[in-house]
Length: 616
Image 1 (cartoon, one colour):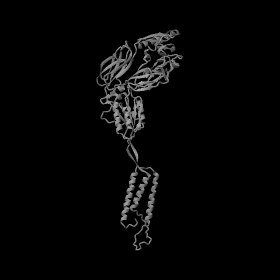
Image 2 (image 1 turned 30 degrees about the horizontal axis):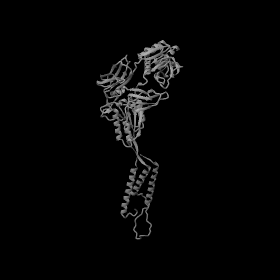
Image 3 (image 1 turned 60 degrees about the vertical axis):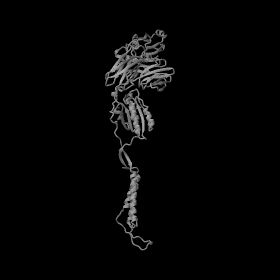
Image 4 (image 1 turned 90 degrees about the vertical axis):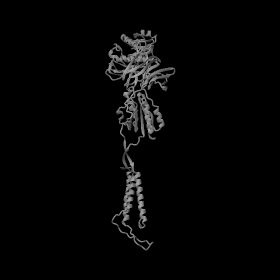
């Protein structure tokens, strides 16, 4: 209990005044006497009273003044009641690849959308909703609003993305919704409890697990081999608990090269060999039988060209020349490799020819005419736009495509400041240091593709079996330099740099168009979020980008979907909230005052009707 205006309790002094009035009135009560003189003033006889006698009218007046005092002071009482219906509501949707998985009732995202629309339909008109999605990152699709038509349109426009959602993105989405009174999370993965139990969340979190386990097949890998020399292979994996059949078709530049039915045992994978391919081009493998998840049923690869290609290897070290020539012929047996030393006469003689690839070990590249160049251990004074800031006597390779558990000890290396148009493929550090330096990188300036190997290759480093990671990273870099400039194969969810040097239009597989603006180095970036062919158009130039997707955690619908049974209630990940409210008693006190006044009036009227109470 309490008072909103405690100072108004001073009005309770009116009770003292009331008592004083009654004491004064009762101290000399009037007595009834007989008289024959009707209009002659006569002093009334008085009797001093020694005993306080209070009639019912006093108690009515006292109670009425007390109620009015409490009413003026704002009397309230504390009550524990359920928290009021939340007014701020956040809807969070998982847009990962597995949300596109289908069953007999449709895909998982459609089920989540129907549940969200039902929440909108049953919400109070004043209740506000915000819509947040997450996959690679969290995005607020719709700000807090109570306009049902706009919210429904935003929910129905959601589409799954061919990426694996991250816990960081989910945490960002929950942080964005932290101020909401109630949060509904729609996903097919049970999120880690540590994210939902975070103290920064203000409201209750309702978890809606959608979908059901499914039997999925996926193309895990596609290797074109070497046209006319080596077979290619396609790796198909089953995530089903029962045997599954399918059909695998492989096309090369839309011409069929392989088509066969397959039968896979439960939880097994099959390597399908084909070829050798007759030529290079865009290789496309696909599963023809539909299954529960479509984004991992297609995969692209680029088969190297079989056209005669010329490569120039320049080094003053005979062992380096021999090792590099062997690596190039292993990558492309159709190479015609010319190996020379770095003497001025030899360079002058080769300057008359244009090569498809020039591999230059400690050589000034300005004297070589080549479509693509690989600079190895470049000299500080001439690095083709690369800024060589120093050298180290020994370097360690610590990261290639993945982090290396044990660093690979290399020889001497240059410290190179990469320009904006170049992306590192392998990094390391000076021996005994934690300072990261790029060791292998590639990029495409306007002059043509350029690669960098910052460490020295003397003493047959590439052929040393203990340094196999350096050889594999070098092969990846050379393959990137040899890729056609008008076609690329990438992975969804990873930024793709495009050397455009001019504004371009990106056409996505679904036909949508996006403007691309290159940076100061002429490179434009985009992040493919769906599988298929993207087309970057800039004037008369076109670049085709083929996006693949596979992730075992999303493709395995049995493991990734920890789904509740259909009859199970939706769990709430917070207790039912209650609140202690201050409830004003104004109405009650006003009613008490009114009843007291009515009761007092009734007593007065009844006394007056008797006719013999002259003091009333």
